[in-house]
Length: 326
Image (cartoon, rainbow, N blue to C red; front, side, top):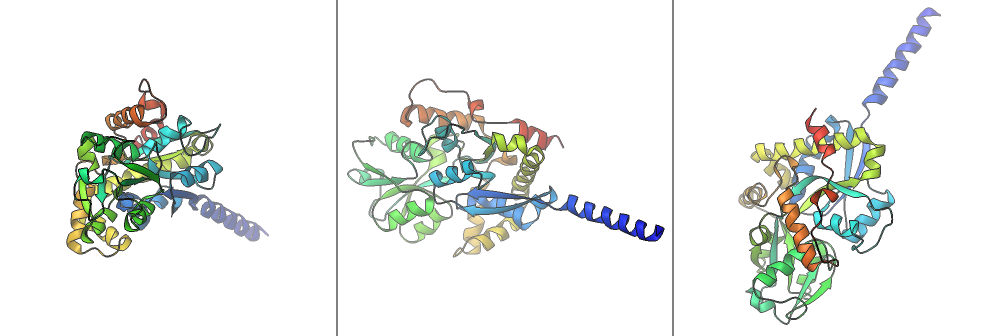
């Protein structure tokens, strides 16, 4: 009997230990594009599991769908344009939520996007009388494109039309179908389109300077209910960004698996762009100066005009601080 009880106790301890080591499932929603390289690298190299979470990633059709899914609890974690977080916080998104509490916890990249135009639109001046496509009218990279055009002397609501179509893939589809002639497009879609005769007229980060492009985000209520998982996600993402910057060969191999139709030389160039100026955030740190640029553009092109709010209204630095402290 003593042996039997000892065996049962041992089995119970083993089961408890196995249960404790089972990674917590986390559902993430993201836009497409090579700026997902850190997340792809974390998935490939088990960086999430190392921190005790198992992440699955789906691609969204656009910001409206993404935030609806995040607010409904369908997803726990997101990579999205920082501008979107601001827009929805201020009640200026595609939908309004009384309990909206999404906050940015880490930075993805500092505006790694191109102004892409159809083959016949060879200069910015050629867009006059034509149409641009955006994700959402007053958020996302729409405000960046409006400002770039304004810098070229091309006036919003006078010199061109605007249509709302959604994600990068949807904007690329619009360009190909000629329902729009210019859009902000992320890599590698911009480089692939360039090979087909489309024109890259500008690097968005170069045109507007410091800019917090996309950010990793979660609901404050979810983070409060899952503090361990929130910090684990942050720690894994920080490690992934550091890994990408330190391992070009390995990162290029990840890109090769996740992107199609690019030569080794093109993949190498894409990597260099991703870790270069305006690219991925080192250590996934949020660029607060870049956040200020986002807020300034929103004060001009967003629905609410007036004083620029504090960046900390939309950012929670505490989760990253806890992740970096361990």
